Length: 153
Image (cartoon, rainbow, N blue to C red; front, side):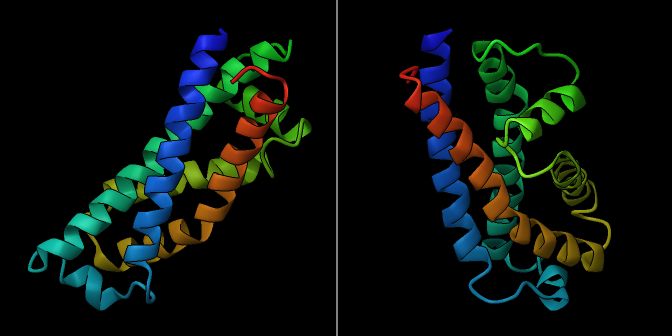
């Protein structure tokens, strides 16, 4: 288990750095409907959007689906369905709130599925995703700090 935790801490740390970099590049200014409408004609912007959506989703998946259950097990907590794990994480103050995490998950799904269909929904979803980045990275940091403080990584 310790080797897997060490590996996941290394992966999550890199994913946090990559998301933060992409977030800064994409949201140097507010992401607008006009930009969302130009994605088909602006390949550089389209690549930044794709990187943001992918990195946001990947970090959330790695933290919520891999790191969190393993950390809970290491802490002697019972693991179960994702919602139960999130409730435990909230109780342990590893995440701000289960509801916030679920909102991030729904937003991630919206960014992926609405990507091509509706520029207005995409622009709004991207702005919301940008607003969630600090909470997502903070949750990852709390989990990594817990692991490191216990000498597991």
